[in-house]
Length: 202
Image (tube, rainbow, N blue to C red):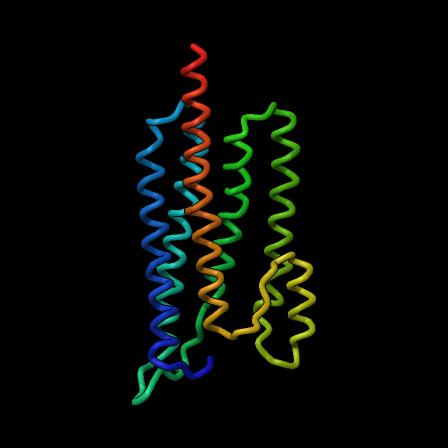
């Protein structure tokens, strides 16, 4: 782990804190909003709420791991000797990305045969993306840069570690807020719009 200034350490810590709050708030909103949509769309909101709840827990653990990995010295933060466990993020993705696919297919309300086929392909693709991305993520030695890029390309993750640990952690956090909390709110609006249109047809 590289030495960090107080500002560098704090900005990552604050972004993690913001992510925990955003995921938790989204979970509460999605669970409480279920009665405002038709019954057929409530499972999608339940799954979306579950996704952000899982993410909230993992970011809580990521933040504590970040705090444990550093200790404050006279002018900044240095590695404490405890490793930063970034696998929490991949554990989160292993659980939440397939659920996001289920959520999407659920709110689309396709025919069962089409839903089953689409969901199978999406979940397999998501699992492969995560599995192929992790080997590149754990390569920290600069001599392994080529392998890291290859694994990153294979996983289709459009994010390269060009700005170091700070940019990486902030980038992943913002992406997760958008993909989970933001997507959940979008699913809610779709469900509300579809529910309203059905009411108008009656």
